[in-house]
Image 1 (cartoon, rainbow, N blue to C red):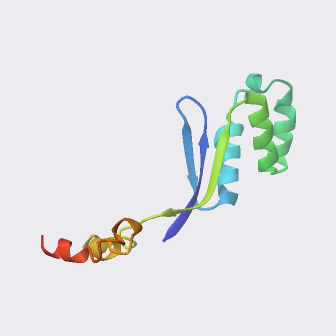
Image 2 (cartoon, one colour; image 1 turned 45 degrees about the horizontal axis):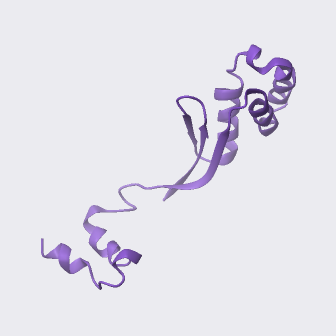
Length: 115
């Protein structure tokens, strides 16, 4: 099972960014969110944000951007991405029987095989 890092930028409407890992996600936010902002919206912080970006201090640039714009960003790391191989349709009955909801009922596979 693969994992992904993602961020939700609380604009209207919210923007969502996905990346293979947290390090790449920080670069994505720096390029796609911070660097694409109109400098007029950053007031006196635009020069320090430019400097942080040029020095590849992605986190510093993003934090300064959040403070300048008042726009929040939630960042999440290591979230699972399910593929068909991770949850095959023909195995769902067997997998369900081991979940909490079905623990007190016993085997669920019997009800799926009766269909």
